[in-house]
Length: 132
Image (tube, rainbow, N blue to C red; front, side, top):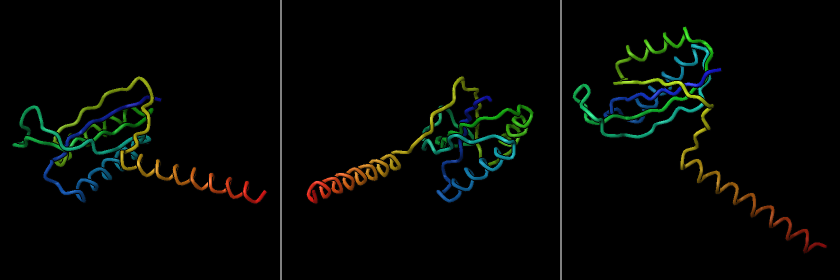
């Protein structure tokens, strides 16, 4: 099993609905190759080093996945080149399996859930002690 990371840049003028649609489309195209997506998230809007298609900024997207099929990867690369919404892309081979990315908002939600569970278990423990 080989691990890959593709960073691609999308036109920054797209609204969130179109951005989500492009992420979904790229994910579907990748799963057609038999690959398994590990991470696929928006890295944010950043300034480009040089102007591309008269754009000074771009929305950077990170896609990490695993696959065994190299021939299908060439088809995916060609599809990325032909997609008009994608300004540039670059794929690299990773040595190790990437860790799963958790967004800051998701981390906060998980921390709150953990705190709630701890509070509930502490309350139950106190009630048991009071009952004894």
